[in-house]
Length: 83
Image (cartoon, rainbow, N blue to C red; front, side, top):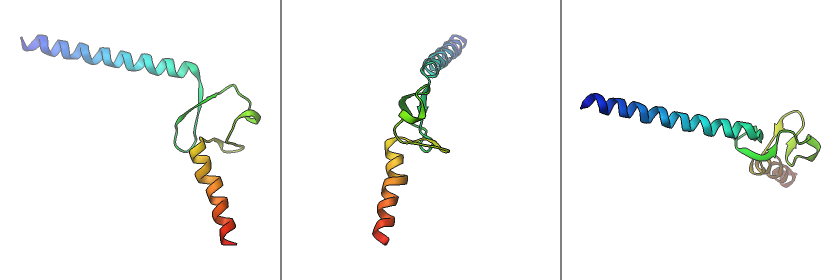
C-alpha cells in the first residue's frame, strides 16, 4: 500500500512539473520585453523597434512605467526642488 502512495505522489509531481514547463514554454513563445529593474514581463513585443517603445532607455534597456517614474520622473522633481 505504501508503494502505491509513493508512486502516485511521484506521478503527481512529474505532472505538475510538466504543466509548469508547458506554461513556461508558452510564455517564452510570445517573446515580450521585461523591465530591467523589476523583471516584470511587459506587453511590449521584442520585435518592436526602440523608437516606438515607451519608457525605453537607450544604453540601459526597457523599463516599466513604475520603475521609469521612480528612477527618472521623481528624481528630476527632487533635483529641481533642491535648486
